[in-house]
Image (cartoon, rainbow, N blue to C red):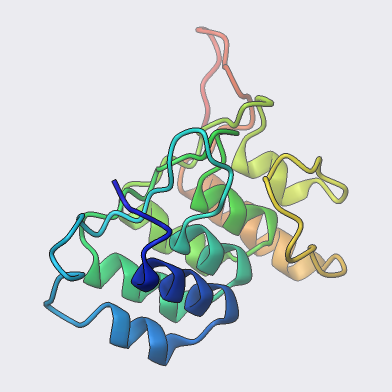
Length: 174
């Protein structure tokens, strides 16, 4: 399990939070491992609401950093959910980063997963005043951008996102 109190972990979190791709590149060398100490999956503990580096980069829209994490840390669990059931894809949907949603889905992220309040990524993408259970308030969503909202919804639907948190057996999600 990833130790977020390790100095390298703290540096990676900070770099992902602030969009410092050069620092992420130094911390995650291509073809290398992260000091061979605890694996490179970047999960926090299951009872923790602290966003992982992947969640931070996805939330903030740092596409190059998300791509770098996915390429250079192949053990990263793209569907890792914090104690509130929030994933990196949900954060990207909430903040309307459709390209990041596609990157995560290409690595196997579940576009129809639900969080602890039974809210899907698609619902987060279209809810203007979504509830605060994303676990942090460090970067509030910007003013609504209908173009970004439409692109995010379109991306999620094309990837097969379901609008219902628990579909009835007779319903199909397209």
